Length: 550
Image (cartoon, rainbow, N blue to C red; front, top):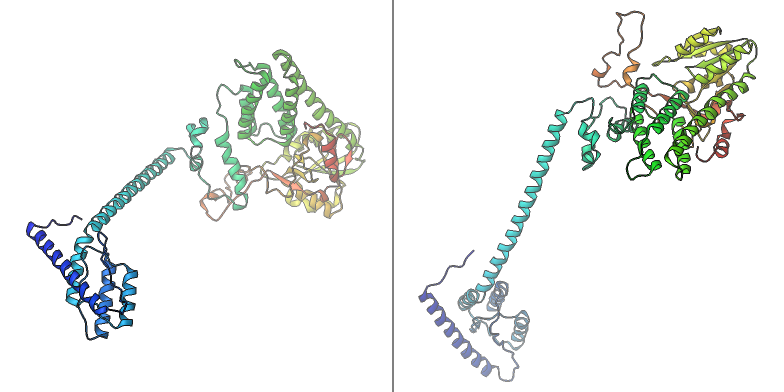
């Protein structure tokens, strides 16, 4: 605020008042000195060109009123204009005045008048400076507020744009921009949520498995010219369950990789091995998006990459021939010859008249039973099956084709048939480092019931399915299938609908379709490998004697 300017007459009146105040001060000073004599009374000397604050003036006024009431004889002493009375001097003056019983105070009217004049003249500049300072602070605050408002408006625009994009997107598949350009989706952490909305029917205990499946949409490589057609075709077969089983999926992957190596062309000004490694990385990301890779597939690709590092000094054609030979050798030794040796080993454990129980469909168990029947062994097979895939039907069809006597039951009738079973043969998806067996969901239940009836459980598993991972349950890591597969089942009555047809309309109903379960080591009698029949506790030995690349 601006102080109003004084008129010329007011300025002259102020000057006259100042002169009169100075003269009165000099006169009062002379009287006080003459009266004081030998009493050593200290007087206050005026300090010129100093500032008198409002607080000091108010303190002086209060002090003067107290002294006026305490003492009846009050003598006037005007305060010097254009000066400030320091707190130290006022305190010492008050103390000495009480000791010497001299009054050197002014009347209330003169004090107020002089203080007003001094305050008006001495503090006018300070008031102006304070006003200027307040103005600058107010301007800074206004600038900060403007910046904050601008930032809030920008955030609001971004949120609105995000909402519009999510509404325009298709709910089933993510937008191509988020899939093809990873950098656009990773600019902000919240953008990754724009691809797939959370399903309200997801179980909180398995949230990490749902997120792992959803993240494959973001990190998957787009289907373009950089991915070989053989890999694209293989991914479609994985997703549609045309190729199932650990060994079948591993053989199909190695055959496709062999085709990729044969057709690979080295990029300009790049190394052959490094360029091939990048191409295989993109292919594996695409296949993982279609269906998570099995342990056997991971071990096979790890072995292949270890062999690729040894061929860096060779020419392109020589490296291609070497890699193709490595793939053929791996399929022959680690899968075919290993299956043959396991079949010979486990055939000795089958006696005439035995009742063999198996669960689901395993290519290795099928091969063992067929070769044992061909060798002249007389036995009967009970095939246990479970939803939703009902793989046991395929196992039953193939065994019956070879003339083997078979029975077919569902897993809920397992306890009724177990008393007449001689041995249980099970396949495996992988065997873990702690001796646990990871296999098709339902395998652990079969092994548990067999343990309760004291029936030996033999697991046929090749060493290339050994994993260094330790897992005690099927919650930490698993593969989630489509929950609708639990609802859609074949029925003889076409008009009859399942009670779970509209299960998504019920908020309190959740379905979970996990692919694998983990069988503890104490439920398995022995693991039959191409090396020998070993207890589950010997799995770390298998991992140690195998080549380091596997």
